[in-house]
Amino acid sequence: MAGDKGERVPEITVMTDVVATVDAVADPDRGTFLVAPADLGAALGWELKPSGLCRGDICVPVRDMDALSVDGRLDLVAVAAAVRQPAVVDLDAGLMAVALPAELRRRALHDLEAPPFTLPDLDGTPHALSEWAGRKRLLVTFSSWCGCRYDLPGWQALHDELEADGFTVIAVAIDQSAEDVRPFAEGLTIPVLYDPHHLLTELYAISNVPTVVWIDEEDRIARPNGEAFGTDIFADFTGHESAPHLELVRRWVRHGELPLEPAEARDAVADLTDDEVRARLHFRIAAEAHRRGDEATTRAHVAEAGALAPDDLTVWRAGMPLIGEDPFGQDFLDRYDQWRAKGSPAHALPSVRTED
Image (cartoon, rainbow, N blue to C red):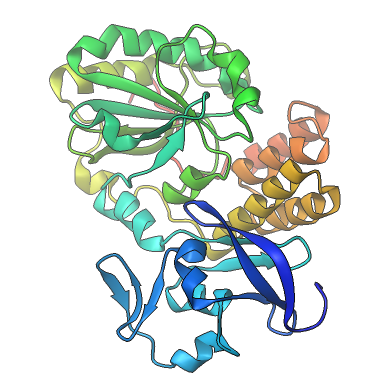
């Protein structure tokens, strides 16, 4: 671990819904970082007040304020636990990842309210989901490490067909960098964003790509996470055609027809387990370590993430390129066959078939 208790580290990186760098002290006995109270807001987005831990208008009462501090500094892991946001720390690497509030996911899966998010496009310009408010939206997740990257022209064609009817396709790549995605987005006019910290997979409980979410004009989820394809390029491999789902989208956009009643859609997709949430935190640390060229830290956290979520392709398959493995190679195919043999477990509705 990083030195003796109370050793100052020049700077740490904390990943929540944003990425922040703050000065800190490493506390290996507690397995945490300690920060000055003035830096808590920058690190975690919360402030310590007499009423408790507060973020905007939300305040969480704290019974034992002393349990949050060490020698006048605040324990980041203890603070995160107090607001029920699990955390993973790597003291040696100076990295900490903190889970998003589980309430946001509950709203998506149970209340069918689309959680807001802001992600960059391939030129680095941030875009919020609310930018397309008042339109029906198809949130399409894909990745450069998935064959579904070749589906983008199909989603563009659907967007072009239905745009005048108040419809937009928003493509989000679960990827490390814009350059990983750029070759597959050439010539597209649909918004193509990327999610280097896999926030969307936690926010919407996404565990595979391609996963598609239908969001209506009022930010309600009309159809929750579902496997769907924009073309039939890989129909022989997946066993699923694109046409049945695309036709349902047309009927929704043009006639307001819902494939599921809200009562059916509510809780149709299971929430992430605690281990799956922690796997995402380890993945975020691995991804950040990879950006820094820290191979040992990358490998350690990719392995931990994969062990915690062995059926989550946004974890184990996404981790393959980080450690020099081929996400299209024989190792992937062998693991994919094992995953299929388990019934293709994913946090998603199955592909729409013709009889649906």
